[in-house]
Image 1 (tube, rainbow over the protein chains, first blue to last red):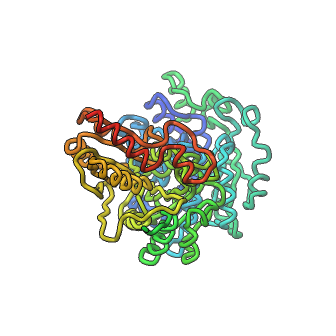
Image 2 (cartoon, one colour):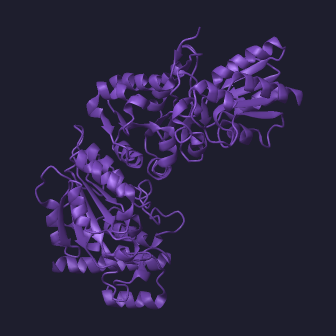
Length: 267
Length: 312
């Protein structure tokens, strides 16, 4: 764990650096999913090859909550898909690091996302392809709790269960907040775990900031159903003045805040 | 009497033929396989057919996912749902990512008949035409439909193929050329040009015959590809004939008429008339009565040509 604590701080610092350079973007939901993406890429869950991003039988990772892409970019750079210095081009004209992920521009990005719900349902297509006789791969999809209000999420959830997509794992970054307030203030999700279970998914709940617990949940034996992992997280995690603050969903970081955040992260 | 066959049946048959020669072809539907006619493919290749149930948006995104794993995906539903309900998925998952997905969307236009205005897409061409990377094809008959399906499978990228419910005249044959983006001149004439797509091409041919008896000779152009539009054919028609009439089973706003107007604008100044649906929704009725009601007939085209020629 100590290993991942240091790594998580470094990724958070990269996220803060790139968002500060961009002077726009989404700090809160990026900081909440750091451990989820570390578990996928750096704890032996996802099969990938940074030297061959288009490898046909790679596992697919879909960041369905696409606005959290600064974290995806930081992790992709960390594992060697592109040089870390490029993180500072986030959201700038001509950069392959678009404000929301673009699979045709950024090596390692498996799905263009940004319109919430789209990544989830594209994942159903990927998972169907991954089970065809020509292929053999898994699909890992990171969703948001606000995103779960989109109707298409449930169209996709129904299809994944219908087609018994046991190569599909959905990890919910459940930080409880969205743009206009808490989930419960805006549109209650109710018992989100029970909802996935009712749709025919295998479900579990983990500490979304425990890299080993997330990875273990991903690696558990499959039972013929798509898997839903509810990762309980803190929005803005790691930067105290951003933690659990609705206002930090999408807001530029000023110089003073940047210095304070970096000091706290100690990187 | 010409052969009568719907383009949706030709679409389904073509998919089944294509499935035999191309094992990378997958077909998706949203609980309308017996209406879009993808059932012909599903019956022969059930392991390459995915039914997404009544969830068109999910079908479009999932089709993009399948396509990005190396498949050519044909996704079908009614035009109103594929182009309308799932517009944003077609935009962001298919066109924005440049997925190799072909939308075979049926029951377009009032000729779908009794189901009424909620089901008669009159704006689908306009919607699809605005999307970067999207190719838009409205084949004129069942024979051309098969050629379009095979050409689509050979051409990478997002594509919309418009199909119809109504059995309509077959006016082309095996020897009629078909190339995506290249207009086909079906009849020569120097007094006016009728540029038509879909089932209105047959009506254009009938109109040209009527007009010839009055001494007005029309060039009839089958503009099966609305995007990319064959601008050269449009400008040549303006130059050679000096009057243009478009004809489509679609709103006159944003469809073939709109596309031809854009091509002419700034390049040619000729009398120009658009036959199509005049900014209205459809309604229930028999296809024949609806064609009269909405002015989608050979008579309406002939009248428009007379108006255009009179302004020369």
